[in-house]
Length: 83
Image (cartoon, rainbow, N blue to C red; front, side):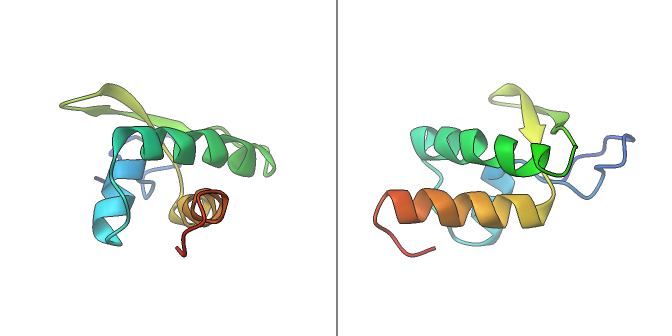
């Protein structure tokens, strides 16, 4: 769940890992929307997502937990849910 990258994002997680840790939706389409929402949030800080290998999905983006928290909340609001 946590990236082992050495690029300064080693405490970052991928969306599925974050979702499982926080009992959030894990459907692939939902996580895709979270990733789409997380990118701009992270770029606001001038950073880019990290990358890590996932056994089922190949290379996936990783984000700091605060970015995923915000992205999941944004997607939940757009879907009419409470994060």
